[in-house]
Length: 112
Ligand SMILES: [Fe+2]
Ligand SMILES: [Fe+2]
Image (cartoon, rainbow, N blue to C red):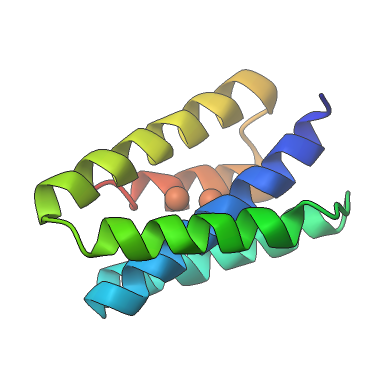
């Protein structure tokens, strides 16, 4: 599948997950992560559009709400897993420069 398409859906999902956790935890850190993920999603929207963006966002938003209700240990595990997959994805598929380098830098700050 096209890397821009995967990045678009990945960032839509990351935005939903961060928003869901933030809505439960109301923590500045999660809010910042949500704002970052939203800006990443916006960035990839200029290359591709997909009818799966909204379903992916809402699906992960619900998952984020559920994960947000769990103990911090679980939140940490889920977030760190998602972020390390995101980093692997960018390193494997993109040249790390320009906006992609900024996105990668943001993701590094999302680890808990
Ligand atoms: Fe992201
Ligand atoms: Fe992230």
